[in-house]
Image (cartoon, one colour):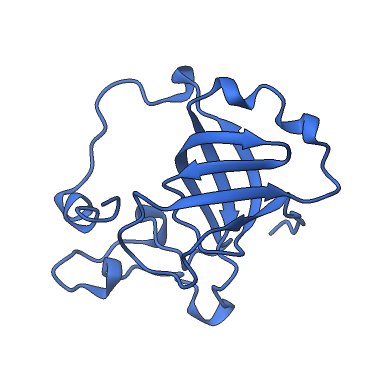
Length: 154
């Protein structure tokens, strides 16, 4: 196994203080870049409507990481699936990824809607969403995933 280090480029600031499973759709967050980053690293980002935000699930401790299959959200009505077949936070590398709406940029701060990360979450990368990187064709998922996500973005 290769070991490597990733440093945060900034942090999330919002009203959500604890990790919760649902109701992320209207969450407004500020992503503030760390001081060592030039504000010019964000130049041109305003021309995009959406961004991909990669972040660290920093409150996940090693003892709760999932290495085998389990019922999503521990709901036995859902089938057991591996951690790589779900989007739970207890992942081996603790990396989260969410597509957000960019509301505005001010200097080294981005205001976004729909980031499912809590206050203080370290940001590890920001990428613009481009049509050419979106899936081609129909997206298929099992019914349990649709049911689980029914109120996630409300």
